Image (tube, rainbow, N blue to C red; front, side, top):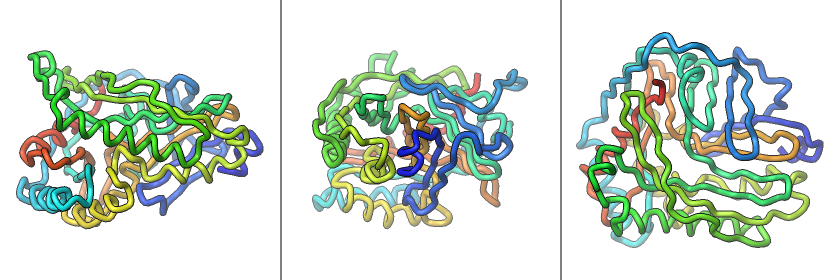
Length: 324
């Protein structure tokens, strides 16, 4: 990343949650039959495949992990919160699914700001920006934390305004502000707690709360792009605070919510540098191809006010493919 940034050479990258598996390639070397991507944000609009006509409406059937398995992991996290070892912990699970289309069809038709398909491995259709940098070196991060179904929102639910949701979101904004302070000369909150609407394949939708935290990078930001970017990982919105201790808590709790005991590329990051601007996304809304079949990975933030039953329902609500 440093080398290609110094050369102002456009490239794509993606890496797993632990940053143990990392892929970086010049855009000109990427073959569509192996990797397909699409990015649509304020600075970069790029894709390497042509749109196709939707033949069949998507249908997804989740087969959720048993509630008791989830609750065991939840109780472990909740105990750490009550001990004061974390203020917010993002707990995730994998859910076997039945899907009436292939992952290649998902990348063609899913509606999302960021899309990535890696042959025989996974597809991601993420609504969540991670870090974007304009040509002047202003970096912006967009933590997304707080979810409500459209049906609940339109019925007048005030859950997104509840202390639990406010605390959860504020904690992540503060964490991102601290992360950016490691690499920026100046940091500020550009927008605080605005709503995004995301449509699901069944015609329903989700409202999610985001903020925009910005900073000014040094003038040589392109020449050491890999160094400062790695300083920000793992993403605060999918870990918690304080980050280092919370990552330890997540590792212990999620041994029971994943068959192989870890997230893999889910909640990792992918992004593009076009020679002048940079953008990246947190890999949420994620379907993985495993030997046993397809699994959908999802989760949510846990605070001391969280209730296991509600959090369990939220991770199921997040199992959708935005194809319609």
